[in-house]
Amino acid sequence: MLDFPGLGIFSKEFKMSEILITGAKGQLGTELCHLLDERNIAYDAFDSSELDITNELAVEKTFEEYQPKVVYHCAAYTAVDNAEDNGKATNWFVNVNGTENVAKAAQKVGAKMVYISTDYVFDGKNEHGYEVDDDLNPQNEYGRSKAAGEQAVQENLSDYYIIRTSWVFGEYGKNFVYTMLRLAKDHDKLTVVNDQFGRPTWTRTLAEFMVHLIDTDAEYGIYQLSNDGSCSWFEFATEILKNKDVEVAPVTSAEFPQKAYRPTYSIMSLDKAKATGFEIPSWQEALGTFMRNIGE
Image 1 (cartoon, rainbow, N blue to C red):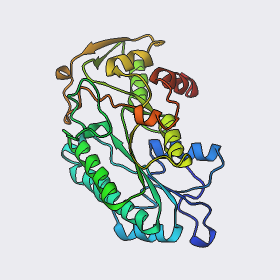
Image 2: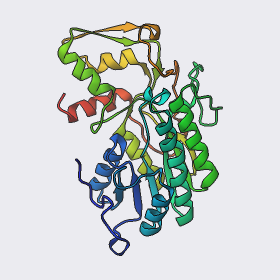
Image 3: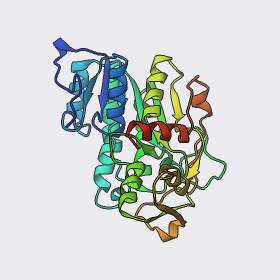
Image 4: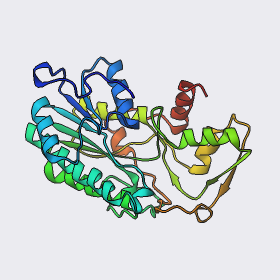
């Protein structure tokens, strides 16, 4: 159990900040909390055990008490395959109803909101990549819920930032990098799909961009943020394991069936994010720094 300053324990009389974070113990939320700690920026952070975002009254009461000016909405249901069946209802309750509750509460107290979305809102059939204003056409339940979450934010708030991201990895949660490193310890050969292309995203880069939008008072609207460059999952795995004694072999998606549809091309344009003055490291640079940080 991680312990964060202000993790839902301060009453209104002892409120320390104007920043509220949901999903504070998740992969991105934890990264964001550490970033703000490093910069000596106060915040009030809540995980699902402190604040159930699907409970409209609880969300409204919390926002009324803390009166945040900025809300970083990191809470999300991210079990993509489970969202197709057993987790379908939870996926919708958290990503749509929960997001709507947070957006309404933010509007009521006059707070800016940062909402994290996904490349899965697109169908993945455009080999030329996706601009922020391209039509949405999600092909799995997770993508549909995040697209509906985007709509909930837009319909209930005027001061918002929607950030679409993809292929997220970081120090504080389960992700593809940790999976590859774990499997490499027990296998001589790994097979990874080589016909799905996207952009990896280090949680540190994403957290820095979230804060950057607020700090620079950037134009409200939709942004797309991943690390620069693109690759296939096979190429990503090869880079992760380049110093390990394991063979990485390419396979097709047909050889690796999964419940949820995965986009073939989910490369999103970063032009709007770059136009804010934010410098985006390449995915190889981000991965290299991350690997050094975890001692690999």
